[in-house]
Length: 169
Image 1 (tube, rainbow, N blue to C red):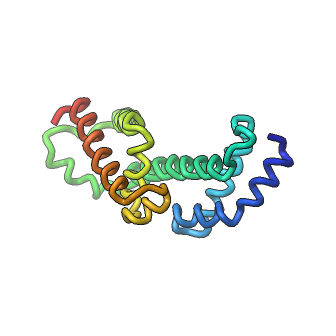
Image 2: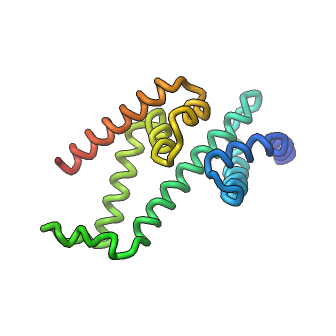
Image 3: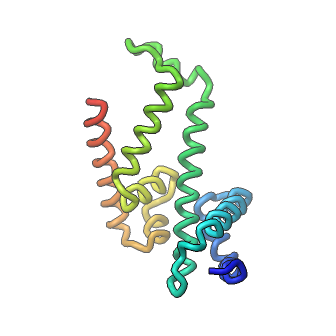
């Protein structure tokens, strides 16, 4: 896909993408940032797009994955930047507070565990965790509400099983 074709296709979807980004971020500025990041990633990987297939779906998938990745990073930053007072409960624990290296390794392991359950389960789970209702998730993913509930339940079950297998009860 040429640069000109890409620009034409992307600009034609601008309003649709903005609406989608706004639903994901629930913030106008963040939605604009998400569109820019999506445009950069889509442009960078435009050679992977198969001409004749659905450009809107392709770009929407990039946007959704970009949002999920940014959310994961932001969540990790929030945890790292939390004040020490929020970790006082750990002082009651017999185990010592792990150092930052251990925390980073554990977070990487959690990411691997999360990725291992597959997008079919992780995307509804992340959206639910982000605060979306079952109905909103169903509309966004274009699947029945029952399927959303089932996938979230199975995601929890798979995550619990993998975490318990890795770290014990």
